[in-house]
Image (cartoon, rainbow, N blue to C red; front, side):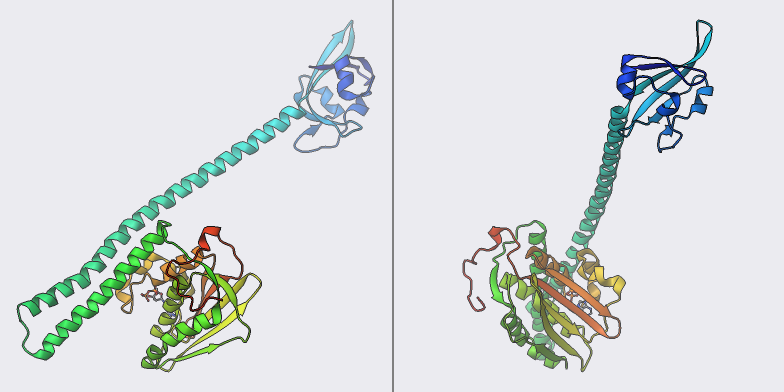
Length: 373
Ligand code: ADP
């Protein structure tokens, strides 16, 4: 519906139709009252001067006592019975404008979602390529120890050794490479299981202190052999928290093992704890050569680390990626800070409360109750 108004040259209203009155809420408005000169972006205010421009047609802000509205205004000079006058037509387009704004906001949302989808698609493509690379590299790493085992076994079978010592060397080679192969296969299977979301967790409440102490004791011999001092600062009060004992043992063993393995002669590994209402934390601080900050991601990235397997100290390079995934699956975190030349600290945060789906808090069928709280 259109509002019609006719003004004479002095700005007096000669005519206003019913819809015009309804729109403006004034019976016979003066031109001055109707439109103010204040600009309210994004709409220009309707200035009296604009009446000089015959054929004016645009959206303007119309002022009213209760705040105003957006109108689509058209101005036309007319001649009524020899009297020069100005005809103004207006239509309330506030709702239209609001809808337009909403449509444009929705369009922006759709655009952003589409861009996100494109990004995710690209990431999936990259992941797919990385997986291919992972499979190729892993197959290579599996073949190497297998070839060594096969060659050594063949030498033994054909008695191609000269001395009993040589024979023992080949047997040891089979044993070592067999062990390495077993670790590799276990790691790859674990990794695949977590990736596929097929790993079962049996989370219970345990005191973290005796749990860590027992793992640490397991590494006393290795630390001595590497000339590394192993220490633990134990708080006096227990630190109950929720975790899967088998899986967290795997994670902490890996961290402590690395802290000794990548340490220096005469170095140290210090373990300490911290706790808050939500999390219990165990820190493993070593005095090794440290890891540059730009390499942190690589430590936890299965694809990167496998690519550099030759640099691993008889490890598979999957230990850390698996450890991080296991910790996160249990509602915790595995983090790292390090200073090159000083050492690294890996720490695990374990939830102090139940934060996982109820299905995680099941009893292991053959659970050992060694550390049950
Ligand atoms: P690996 O079997 O090679 O030890 P991990 O997944 O356990 O594999 O660790 C990945 C890599 O992170 C290691 O090869 C090593 O380069 C680095 N790293 C892990 N722990 C430490 C540490 N405490 N100090 C220095 N480097 C470490």
